[in-house]
Every structure is written in structure tokens, then in C-alpha cells.
Amino acid sequence: MQIHTGFGDKDLDLRKCNPLHLRAVLEDERFSKCQIVLLHASYPFSKEASYLASVYSQVYLDFGLAIPKLSVQGMISSLKELLELAPMNKVMFSTDGYAFPETYYLGARRARDVVYRVLSAACEDGDLSIQEAIGAVEDIFRRNAMHLYKLNVANGSVSQITTIVDNSLSLSYVEKDVLFVRIVWNDASGQHRCRVIPAGRFYDIARKKGVGLTFASMGMSSFTDGPADGTNLTGVGEMRLVPDMSTLLRLPWSRDEEMVLADMQIRPGVAWEYCPRNALRKVTKVLLDEFNVTMMAGFENEFYLRKKLVSGEKELWVPYDNTPYCSTTAFDGASSILQEVYSSLKAAEIVVEQLHAEAGKGQFEVALKYVLCTLAADQLIYAREIIKSVARKHGVMATFLPKPDLNDMGSGCHVHLSLWDNDQNVFMGSSESNFYGMSKVGEKFLAGVYYHLPSVLAFTAPHPNSYNRIQPNTWSGAYLCWGKENREAPLRTACPPGVPLDLVSNFEIKSFDACANPHLGLAAIVAAGIDGLRRGLKLPEPIESNPAEYASTLKRLPTDLLESVESLAADKILHELIGDKLVTAVIAVRKAEIDHYAKNPEAFADLIHRY
Image (cartoon, rainbow, N blue to C red):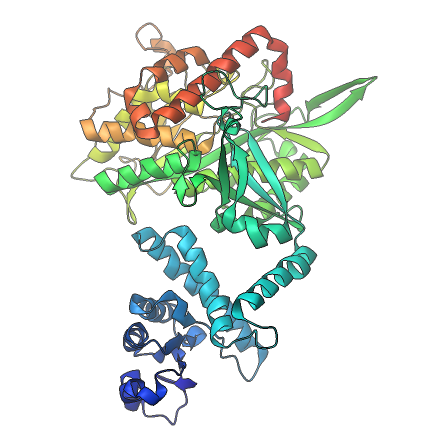
């Protein structure tokens, strides 16, 4: 039985619509086996309804009509109150659409927005895990109603119809709309890899149980698909790639496919210690628990466009154009590609702040808006996928390799970072605390990054080719120093438009490139910052001109990958915070690449196809 409670028709007496008036009925043994649904979220008596659902087994809740009739905040607060006590398997949604189709559409759309906001907040507060929130969505929008209303009446038991509905959804509906789902991960060498699952099987099995993957996958390098010596990872043993359904994305360039990022788990719900996404989550949790701050990140993607030239039997990839920095001609020539890149990123809810031609021949940059660092790393992987795939669709290649041509400019993946306490930028200084525009928290965090930077480079500039890019006088940060608005420094504090001139809002790391696994790169930065905060580290004075002018007194950053790896090997802090086993594997992969490319320098030419 459905009972109207709370607001609704204009002829009701709201004083008598409090669901607590139903207690006599609910206590009556004659009705103890009934299933009673309280409609309209019982608004404004949502808390009372939640209480009844928590203590009476026969009471269920439906928040139709409250959505979309209330204000946005009213809808959110009403649903929050319903979920305060009520079990998740007792809450449902119906649009309560009537009179004209738009009410159905508004209800369906608003409900998804509101449920997303409420459950996201619950995840941030620690009330729910992401997987539990995804399960709650399925309960609220489908499963609870299926069980309660016995929508399987013509087909047998609930469990049977669940299978029938799931199979029918997966095989007949899903595969008409989506053919494949790519389960994507980024390995220790920074390469994007995926397992492709037919959509029916994905939605039926793989989205919850994942797919198996050999331990060796996190020991692979950029030159071979076997584990490097010393990683302690072999073909013996298997973990699970478990899709993070919050990252599910319909491919903007191929509408019959989807992709989703995966967590690496050793058993259900237990992270594998080599999982890059978990490594970043782990250190950001330490940052939040100990210092009550989170880190925001915004990446600048530099890449080259190249076109294929066939000369006899030889295939060459030549520059897309020959134009200078911020050239209008360059942008005009690539406009159709960049327009589709922008539209695809927008469809993926990745916000682009700027696009322009860079200084290299056929080089461009797409700068992304800063977001929470865990999300920024996810978005960076998707941004690279989108840029490369859209370029391929237009018959050209996009390569993010740091130095594809030793005689031209390098491509970085500069990252802008800031610290936040809720909605307050606490990296930025104030009248009470101002060290060259930074707060005390900002200075200590940046000092940690400064002192650990040689080790951090093994994560952020992780390939021998990376060091062909990090050279003096190339805006890539070759000396260990920092400076305000100094683009030759590896660490630049920034004062963008709108920020008072005596303050800075963020800092930029120049020595970060696209060979880096973004989750591991950011994890190393956070770990270094945590050490700075714990020990109260201080920055030296800033360098306010070209660091090359101080070459005799400034320490040079590692000139090759081996120096960075040796620094990381001795860095106990990064081993401790990121995880000794993962750091050991990373070091082994780096050493294998150092050895291979030293012996096979011609192999650099193939890397444009890998990055």
C-alpha cells in the first residue's frame, strides 16, 4: 500500500500528514506483514519517515514529488534526512510525473543530480565507500522497487528475474547501444593499457568482479612487455582490475564504446600494494588526517602533432606545421582537430582553460582546470586518450614524448598545485602569514617538495628521454631552486589574474612530463610535502632571474635518470609513505630502461608510438 504523507494536494491538512500518525496502524499485528510505502519523502517530515523505516520492517520510503518540486537545497536536505536512519534497501524513487511528459523528465534528471550530490558527500565524509555508493544508486533507482513490487510476478522468483533482467539489459539493450568497455590502467612506466570486455559481459560480471591481470603488468617497461629484473613481479600471481564505475565514460570519438579506470585489488575490497591509484589515495589521506588539507592539481598538456610521410618503403612522421609560439596560423591549421578535442573533453566533463600553439614545430598545449588531485590524475589519463584518439581520427599522430626531436623544444606536463581546507586556499598567504606570498603551511609543503625534488623526479621525469628535455634555458627547470613567476625554475609560485600581487595562489612543477604515471607522480609530490609539513622545513631565498646565471653556486638537478633513481633509492620518506614494494618496483623499471636505451639509442625513435 502506498500512503500519501507530507505535502501534496492543496486540500490536505498538513498538520495531519506527519507519518508518525501511522504508528497505531504500524503497531497493529494485523498489518505487521504488510508493505507500506510512504510517498513524497513525507516532506517536511522526512526525518520522521526515516525513523519509521528504521524501526518498522514493513515501512518503505519513496521520495517522488519532493523531487523535482522542492528547491535544489530542499531536495538535497530532504533526501539526506531520509537516509539518516532508513536502511538503503528501503528507499526508492518514482518521478511522480503527471499531466505532461516534462514532469517525468524533470523528475528523472533531478533525482540523479540530487542522489549523486548526497552520496558523493557521504563518500567524502567516510559514511560510504565508492562501491557502496554505486550499490546504493542501483538500490534506489532499480533493485528496491523490483523486489518490493515483485516485478518478476510473471517469471518466477526475485533472484530469477534479477538474472533475467540483468541478462536482458546486458545483452539486448546494452550491446545495441555499447559494444565494448575498455578497462584502463596506467603502469609503472606511464603507459596506458586496457583490457576490452564485451558490454554484455562487463555489465553482467566484470563491473563487480573485475578481470584478472598478472602481477608482471606493473613491472613492464617502455621497451618490453615483460617484468624488469628486481621488481619482484613475475608471471606467477594475479590481481584483479576492478572498475571504478564513477569514472565510466562513453568514448566521445567512438560512441559505441565506453572506458573505465580500474583499481588493482588483491582480493575483493583490498587494494594491491602496487596499485598507483591507491598509492595516491593513501598519501592524500595522510595529508588530510594530519593537516586537514587536500591538494588540488591542474595539468598543462604539451604534445606534438605529426603527419605521416611515405618515402619509398620508409614511413616518416614529420611536423604538422612549422610555426612559432602562439601562432594564429598554427591554431587555424589545427582548428578542426582542436575543436573536436575540446568538445570531447567537455563531454567527459574535463574543463579546458586554455589552448594554444607551443614553440615547437607542430606543438600544442591544452591546459586543464585544477581539481582535487585524485580526480586530476584520472582526468589526465582520459585527456591524453582523447587527444591521441581524436588526432588519429583526423589522420595525424599526437605524441606526448618529452623530447621526440633533440633539435626542437621538449613537451612537458607542467602541474599547478595548491592546498585547500574545504573551500579555502591555504597555500595562499594572508596579512598574518606571508612568505613571498605563501602561507606557513604553503611554505612548509613547498619546502618538502624542494628538498625531495631529485627523488621526486624518478616519478615525474621517469624516462631517460625526460632528461633530454630538462636543460638550462628551456623553461623546464634544470637547477634546484624556486622563484616567483620564474619559468626557468623547476618550482614556480604563481600569481594569476585576480590574485593580489603580493600573494601567490599555487605553485607549478615544470619537471613533470607525460612519461609519468600521474597517480605516482602526484603521490611522490604529496609525500614530499607531508615531510615538509611534519618537519617544518623552510625554503631558501627565491631565485629571481635565470638560474643559469648562478650555475656556479646552484645545485644542478639530476642530469640523467640514474641520478634521480639513486636519490630515490636513498629517500626513506618516499619509501615509507608510498610503499617500499612499489618504490622498489619503480626503481627496477627505471634501471632497466636506463640500461636498454644506453645500449640501444636508436630505440628512442619508437617511443612516439608509446607516449
